[in-house]
Structure formats: structure tokens, C-alpha cells
Image 1 (cartoon, each protein chain N blue to C red):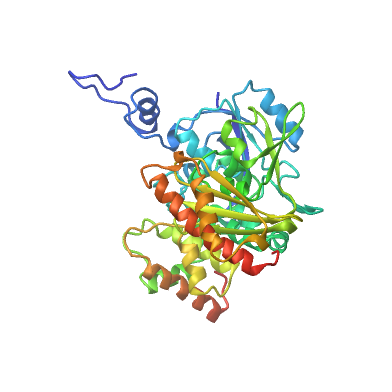
Image 2: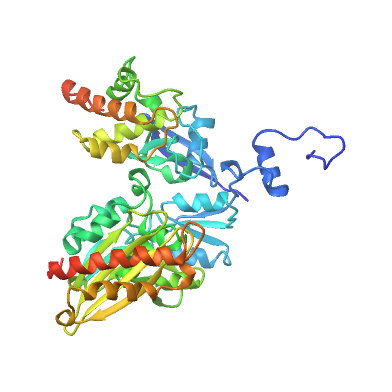
Length: 163
Length: 309
């Protein structure tokens, strides 16, 4: 009964047109068919945020979005942040501030932080906390993640770079 | 196709996502996952009328979809619609405007849009503040006021907030338009296929509003006071994790209230909440006690403010 539907969207700067089943979930599309394994599947309820990617610049739980719903949008994953051999300021800050342990939540945290810094160039600690509160980490206790986001903010401001 | 045998020699089960579908469908041994989302037909209307026609064409097997944060969870929990009618392209569902003294909110407005909208903030700042606290940042970008209401999950907050505000939920059906109070959607109204188009908060200039979600998931409390020419009318709506929202109403004249009367008024209003608010996380008596304390403080703040928001 499943219909196939054509979906046109931009993924990490590349224009794509592909056929998806109507019941195909964005996280499956990104991971299984497009090789974006930074998108992690964990709770499958939109709660943990390990599947966070950006759709038109906004962080979404890709496990809770149908593939057909990204028609005409721009989708970004961690794979798209590494450009011409250079890490993004957010990725760089997470390394410098040791913002991860097992790394499973890290892609989601990085995409969330990227969206935050695009929305607000100088977020204060409360704003960083309220955003990072969206995603779950079982390893770090969050402090190093908060420091990483603050570090990314400072790095972005200092270098005048885009997050 | 081989399946797990019941006792005896165990044959090799199918593997991968195919196994997920089989085991979910027949044994219940595997929790539903994204690989068990059922197939469905997809409709993508651009007007509310087209959306209604699409649903009508599917003989009660269709569901509406907007943010999909809850719908996909429901499909993983066993919901199997024959069709999904995506409302993301439907014009007019994302509006926020004023109709005289009524705040009109489209059902497709996300929590992020609504909580940060200048018209909501200008009309009732405490509503904007409350709306901006629902869920988390990531969910707020995607989830909508309409989805929050029509998911009919007691732990979702908009029903409690809108109940206190005595908001009207406006539905379109193939035959007519229908308006319901927020508490009426828990009574399986309106009928299947009706499309929630707008939420209207009437006489908004009369309102003072407070929302306390600090005790979630135990309890959350929305209190609205309306200044009418003859009296103050207070509606206090209480939400909890597993029970549908309950409300209690007070009416009084401020000049008749002394400083020591607030305690008894709050206690009286809280005591009129139904006994069925109790559940495993807290008894109804505890929940009424929290409500009474909140209500006493809120009434005091409202009366001390003596200004409309």
C-alpha cells in the first residue's frame, strides 16, 4: 500500500532528488540511504535528541519527521560542517573543551549548538543551558558540553566565523 | 518465511528490519520502532476544504499531520492510519492576529512561533511566557498548538492553559463549523475528520493569567482571572501526567474580599476539583493542596496588581 513519493531537498549543500516511501522516516533516510551516520537513532520518540539535524536551520528530531516533509528544505548534518578539511568552530570547540565521552550524543549536541549560535551570536549561560536541555547525555554530566558551546560562541566571535 | 517456533527446536529467525515487522506484528516481543511504521497513502492539500475532502475520501482511516512529533510516536505505539493528510501546505493555519478583543491563533502555529510572537506578548504577556516554556527548544520549533491539543495526551500542556483561558477551539467539518471549549476535546468531540483551524482567546483585555509548571510531572496549574463589570471570575485548570485536566471556578467582588479570605477561597476552589485527579504519582488530596497554595498566591498577586495585563 505504501506510495513512493519524489522528495527534492538540499543535504549539506548538495541538491538531491530521490524517491522515498511515504512511511520513511528522515533519520532512516539520512543514515541508511544517504550515509549520514552522524544521525544516531536512540529513543525514537523525539526525546533524546541524538538524531538532531537542522531543517531550514532549525534543530529537529529526525526520528520524528517523515522524509516527505523535507521537500524543498535545506537539511544539515554534522557531515556537512567539515568543509575543505576544516572543522567548524563548534566542532573545534567540542574538541578543545572535551565536550564528549562516548560521543553518541555529540553529533546532536553539535547541530543543536550550531543552530543556537546562528540564532543568537552571544548566548548567555542560561540560554545555552535551555537549548542544551533539549538533548540528553548520559556520560558527561553536561558541564563540558556547556563549556564547549560557550567556547564555540567565543571562537565564533573572535574569528568572525560562521558557526 | 520462518518464524520463531514456540518451544522445541528453534528455527533461525528472519533478521534485520524484516524481523522487526514480523515480531511486532505477531509476537509483541520487540518494541515498535521506526521500522514498524505502517504504510499509508499521503495527501498534501493546500486549503482546509481540500484537507477535509481528503479525510472524507478515506472512510475514517485518515489522520491529520502537522509537526508529526506526536503522530510518529503514536504510529510506533500502534496507530495504523490508512492515510495521512499533511497540513504543512495548508494556507491560513499559521496566522496569529486579533479579531477585536479576541486573540486568534492558527492551529498550525508552532510553540516557538507562538511563544515568541509580538502580538501574543502584547495581548497577554504571561501567555507568551507560558507558551514559550512548553517542551524543550528543539520540540518547540516543530510541535504545534493544534497537535498538542488534538494528540489528547493528558501530559501535554496546552489543554490546561486554554481551559483556564476559556478559549474556543474552532473546527471545520464537511458540513459546518463547530466551536468547542478546551475541556470538550477530552470527550471525543468533535467527530472524526473535523479539522481544528484556530484557537480563539476571547475578551483578552479582561484577562490576567498565571501558569505554574514547576511541579511537573506531578501537577501544573493555569489560572486566569477575568475582570467583568460586576465581578471577578477566576478559572483554575489543573493538569497532571495521567489525568485529563480538571478546572474549578470562583466568582467574587474584590471589595468583598479581605486579606484573610484568600486562603479559604483558594481552599474551597481546590476542594471542588474532582477526586479523580489522583494517580500513582500523587494523591488527589496532595494535588488539591498544591492547587490551593498556588491559587492563594495567585489571587493575592492578581488583586495586588489590580491592573489588566
